[in-house]
Image 1 (cartoon, helix red, strand yellow):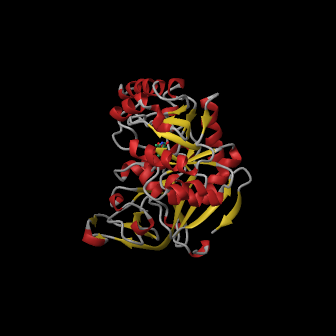
Image 2 (cartoon, helix red, strand yellow):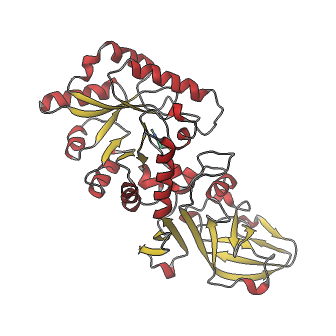
Image 3 (cartoon, helix red, strand yellow):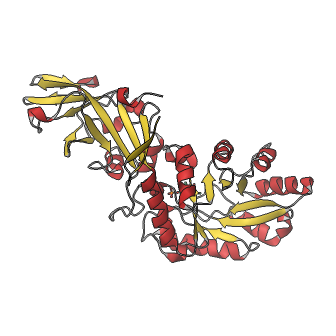
Length: 376
Ligand SMILES: *Cc1c(COP(=O)(O)O)cnc(C)c1O
């Protein structure tokens, strides 16, 4: 890994802020349990640090996307509950059992595969989650398969149903009628299945109110500080801060252009700075001439194209002595909230987070003490 002092960018992850966000969501959930979605390496932030911090905050159940992620998480958290959203594919049952990973069964074929495996073992029943589709048309039993399962519950023989879940398509749109429709469809589906705990809400779903909480919620992005209530103030604490290093400053005047494609034209005397972060670091190329960064609390624009390792910013509005090579500028966090950066880039904070590059120096800190506990 890159020593922090030589890296072009430094990504700071505040584990205390993460824990505070877990407690905030758990508090909103009242009696319902707060699990956590930590797929995609905990939304790009490093599951090896994020998952233990959440476990220390009280989280006991973790959702991941793939079996590989589940096996990696098992090595990190020997005691936690782990659910793999991909379910059980051919040839995976032994690995799931060995690592005590529970599959979210997505169709009758997966139910048969897992139940067959359980019956063939002839030991204690295997835990299972059932994912019911109520409108995503992505993963989960379609309504016709729920009908079959309701009529033939013996398909679950050998399994212990620990959770029935579904997923909201428009939870971030608080007033969208699809939300109560999915909630009601889910409530109707679980009434027809064997008794089990139930889970519907992701981050945004928690903020739709107690009617969406059921027994357990599965927040992901809000834990990492992203706003689960778009259009309203962000209730979460900031977890991620990204800064980039200024490599060079130059005075410019017209006629002159900046960067690949010469897309930015200098029209007046001014000053530019070159920052050592680019699209190879996950700084989206779509922020070319659209993004903003903060220099000493002042927001300044990205000018010209984002290139692989570099961006150029216009610092003409700053006093000449206010900025020097070697200074750091804020790319994400603080004056550049991650949701705003994502919007400027034409994407969502989820994508911005999960594409954060490998080249940053990563610092995990615990904010109250302001102590760096790991500079990797
Ligand atoms: C990713 C995911 C979550 C977490 O969603 P957030 O919007 O990040 O809170 C919950 N459930 C399922 C099925 C998911 O795929």
